[in-house]
Length: 184
Image (tube, rainbow, N blue to C red; front, side, top):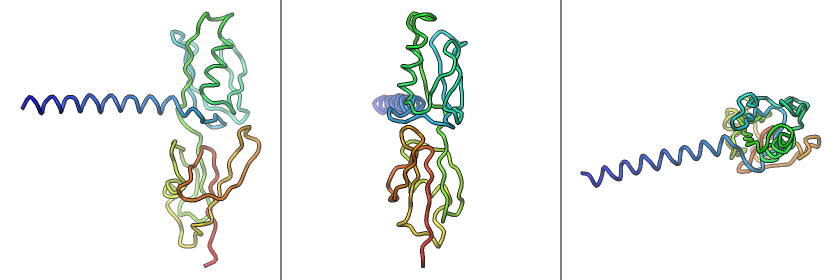
C-alpha cells in the first residue's frame, strides 16, 4: 500500500508544479505578442509597491507611469516594455530596479458575417479560426466555410492587411474575422 501512496503523492506534486508553471507562463505573456490598445497590463517594481499599476492601454497607445511620465507601450512586446521601463528608472531614481510587466487581459478579437452570434470575444493565445467561429455560435446555414478572411493590424498598428484564412490558422488579438455568405 505504501508503494501506491508514494506514486499518488508524487503525482499530486507533479500536477501542482506543472499547473503553477503554466499559470506563470500565461500571466507573463507570449514573447512575440505585440501590445496594443485594449490590452490590460500589470507593471510592478520589486520592493516598490507605489510603482505597481494595472492599466488598460488606451487608443493613443501611451500610458503615464510614475517617475517616467508618458510612455509609449503599444507596438512593444512585454519584454521590450520591461526593458524600457527598467532603463528609464535606472540611475536617477533606482540603482537596479527589478521590473515585471505581465498581460492581465488581452484585447478582444471580432467575428462577423455568417456566424450565429457575431461580436467581440476575449482573445486567448493559441486560438484558431475554427475556435473563434465556435465562440461566435458556429456557422449559419448560408456561410461559405472556404471564404473566411482576417483583417489584421501590422506591427506599427496603422496598416491593416486583409488575408484569406483556413479554419486551422491562428487568430491574434484585435483581429477582425469575416465569414462570407455562400451563393448556394
